[in-house]
Amino acid sequence: MAQDSVDLSSDYQFWMGKLSVWDQASTLESQQDTCLHLPQFQEFLRKLYGALKEMDFNTVIERFPTIGQLLAKSCWNSFILAYDESQKILICCLCCLINKEPQNSEESKLNSWIQSLISHILSAFRFDKKEVGRFTQGLGYAPVDYYPGLLKNMVLSLASELRENHLDGFNTQRRMAPERVTSLSRVCVPLVTLPDVEPLVEALLTCHGHEDQEILWPEFFDAVNEAFLQKKISLPTSAIVCLWLRHLPSLEKAVLHLFEKLISSERNCLRRIECFIKDSSLPQAACHPAIFWIVDEMFRYALLETDGAPEVLAAVQVFTQCFVEALEKENKQLKFSLKTYFPYASPSLAMVLLQNPTDIPQGHWHQPLKHISELLRKIVEDQTCGSCGGPFESWFLFAHFGGWANTAIEQLLMSEAEPPAALLWLLAFYYSPCDGSQQRAQTMVEVRAVLGCLLRLSRRATLSARDLLAAAGEGRDADAGPGASALIRRLLLTFLLRVPGGRAIARDAVALMAHTDEITHEIIGFLDQTLYRWDRLGIEAPGAGELAKELLQELHAQVQQRM
Image: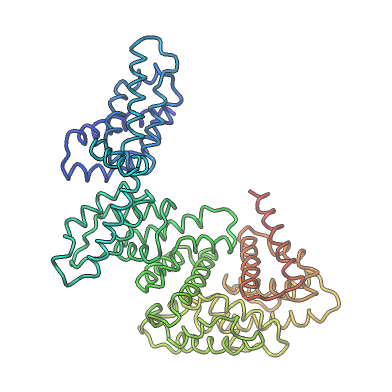
């Protein structure tokens, strides 16, 4: 608390100095400096208000003897009044200074002075010219009706001029001077959250001009992006695409903002992740390849930094689904080839991965899975050293469409025939992409053995959870890597949901499997992913869906109890 008090006093002196400089100078430099510091100054006003409302009048004057000067300078600065919520916060600060029971004439004068400042704030954007007043009255308009209309018409006029400037590239006489466009973007910085100014903001973003260098003020991009991320303005996707293409830091901040929401939100189910991703506008904007590359690259780094964390992988897959939906909606006929989005991928592999399983009869899913496996295996195992891409690039492409891996597991468990080598290889590669050919072959042998055990157990009249886990573990290499172990667990969990005898022992089996927090979270992720996938594909799983939901709730409750 003491440190907060020291910090506020230090900030108070800093901003008092700034306001004095801004008050004395009306140069372009001082205006630019004002706009640059508006977000920080508003945050200072919030802290100041938080302190003032806890003090009585005498304590305020004792601690901040020049507070009247600070608030007066703020009230007469049009940039400050126009910015976001500064006007409202200033009124709150002034109200804290009003003495409800003035004891003498000085205190009464101070109250009147404060009331005059509040009155000034409330009428700050109304012109005070008698000529304008008489003219509007003659037309039958009151100032309260006229001035908002004047602002709206001015904004629309400037927006129209900017659009003409963008389209009429050959008539230099009709072009708006670059300096004027820059000045407009600077003036708009404190105004971007005003609804009436949105058309001008959009026009500035979509007007590229005809110069080699960027003509919009950098702080304008920052202000618009921040307002958009905080849901203080609403802009069409075309304007957001222009913003992120013209200002890379804004795009990077938008992706990081999405990451923060995904990390900070508790109990993130895939439906919730999907809502966050769609709400970010990133999938829609990623229809432009340049934006897709940046977003995809940031997901790639997140995967590498977290050693392929399941949560990050799930976010990549949901983002890809949202992106593909946006791409299909926007591009009935593709404006860009798939090679543009996935430059390291085989075009034929990208095409088969992009197939929507709902467009393929469920009984024919084996064929595209086999084709995907053959294409990946050729790229990964027949690849010459040093060629473009590498196994990770192939895995990263396949990981975008991880639903195919889940489909492969279900196909293996639904068949009583010999497990196809193509599907075994595909799953071994997906769960352990860094393994060499020999390690991958060993994983395939283990998975084949587990599938055989599960097939035999499914024919038994009764099952026990311990027998199931014991049989699934027979013949397995004790030194099997984490990827192979995760794949075996995924097979067991799918068996428990899909086979009637498995559903009867599911709770006991899950209780035995979830002996660590890490595996518990892995099982939660699997159940959530399964429900999400069945819902998207329209797969009806009577009994299995209800069981998965119940297990999910019970595991979440267990996690909460452990915390």
